[in-house]
Length: 331
Image 1: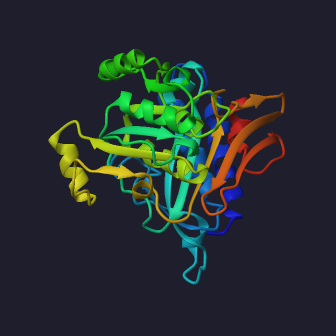
Image 2 (image 1 turned 60 degrees about the horizontal axis):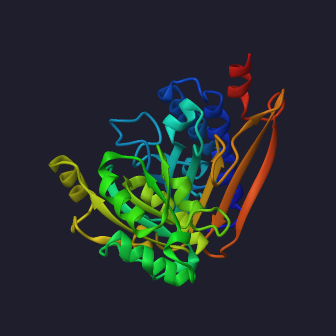
Image 3 (image 1 turned 90 degrees about the vertical axis):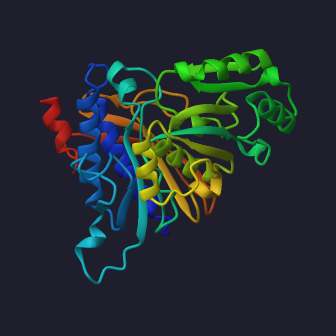
């Protein structure tokens, strides 16, 4: 996978973040998500790849664009193209509610892998645990939360009370939250969006040591790509809500519905991850509008090299090609 593709992916997440950020705090999550989807899809047209969306906005009959199976990239336009053939996982606006209400940690996300290397995760839930490189190999999703906290603390050579765990604030996590509190660890409850906190859990200076609990399975694959690049560790187990989800998973090739997926099961081979902040958060700063210009804060990383780049960019809305949608929104 060409390393120059990394910057192209940042341009795509920047477009989605810039567009959706115009809807920040305006209370319309659907409009914010649509703005991100439209901008991301347009931006893909200029990227020299032969990409197939494997994690996207839903099935073809559920989403007009960025649906599972859609081909993206300019490489498909020529029969003799030598553009790389890659799998694409996207969440044009991770944390739609966060954007709509102006809360932290809404981001635009893309992950890229060689053809066939992402788990085709159905649109269901996944029980997850994520840690940084310092605790790689120490976690076991089949064990209790308190067991995992003790193992991570031992790997980090600290006490359990020094650890901070991110958990989605949901009724389904009442027992998990109680057990973590009884263990002595600290908790940061979040209302939506667990991709950014999962990535933050792999950074030594983020103030987050683990992510635990049940969230979206597609978001789990996106997070796994970043965790691979960061050298962290992750495990996940699908949690189905009904028989329809089980049947859909079987059609997608899932044979063992109780399997615990390890990091390399979720994202294999060479992978790339890019994200741009929409609202300020634990991983990235949000979009700033500066009167005729806008600033973005992005991260891009590759598993092959392990290089992690944080990119600050200033975009001149009046002159930069591809930002016509922002000029229209601003008028």
